[in-house]
Length: 156
Image (cartoon, rainbow, N blue to C red):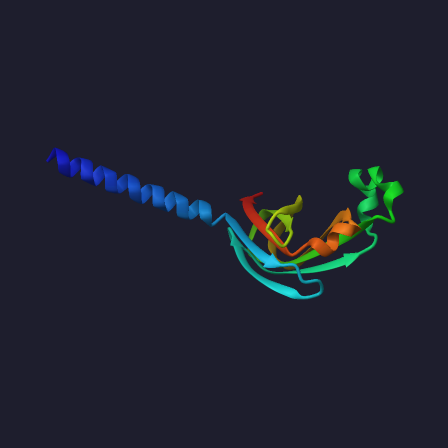
């Protein structure tokens, strides 16, 4: 009877651990996509009830980053910096407000990180495009080959 109890307890612990892992995995998502300017790329990411269907990248030589701390520090280097813009198409069909955090890593051809930044936005009962941008030295922009996108969600 003692061995049967231990076996039953071990199975219960394993099932609980797997269920907990499955729940935790539902709040995070990670994928790597090619860096293609002007093309909508499918993500198929789901974090909590929020689905982030796609991302579109674009570039410009200037943007609203001048109001950020890095923009102010680099104000004299305006001819050297460019801006990478990201547009995430997502939706949350529920009434609850969920905060989605994005971790973006710009990778070179060998998969090494060129730059990394984080952003977040709220989704609540809506479909929307979340637009964000990031200042980067213009000379490294042609070196970006892939983009690793991590997402996590929490009930706000």
